[in-house]
Image 1 (tube, one colour):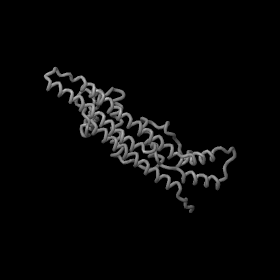
Image 2: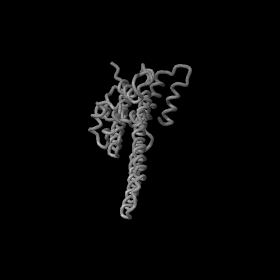
Image 3: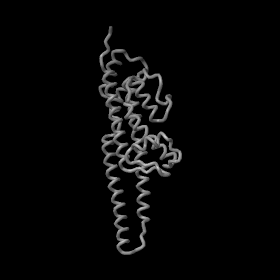
Image 4: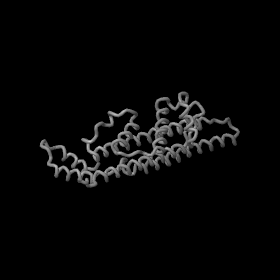
Length: 242
């Protein structure tokens, strides 16, 4: 929320005496008018896309340099030392693992801000339960909160794609990328996604999966912000008195 929105919100709560109904309605109208639906920092999604391209360029450059070095050794009839390639492959793996973790953190931030904006739009007094009182992981319970109190449903295909990304994140964080405990359902689902291989003893993630996951997160964020706009429009619509 912007400064003006915050100031209006504070104005509705600082008085000890009840605010007259007509004034409360006026303040609330001003609050909703100034409430935006942006759930990420300025250009954050665009910058993340740029960051992915830049890191891939660096990784490709590192690997190309090592391959040139190996070719020079072959042409010079030297014993080939490919330790540089091994190091680059390890570096690449860790970078792409971090992309998955960063994407899910970005999504969590989006969901958290969306819940805060929804609370303002609907009114704290109209929310029987807070996010912390709902069950589930930090992503799922925020989606439940948005759907329940925003009175909308997020597209199932969008959420399932992002949920799979979250599951991948959990394997990377809690299993260090080991596939030994990978469920059959996850193994089957991941086999249908581009740029991810779980046939070995650890996750192998290529740039294609990172881009695929990034697009999935972008779509869900855009949908959430669109749904929030609908909620705000409904909240500002004059109530018809029978």
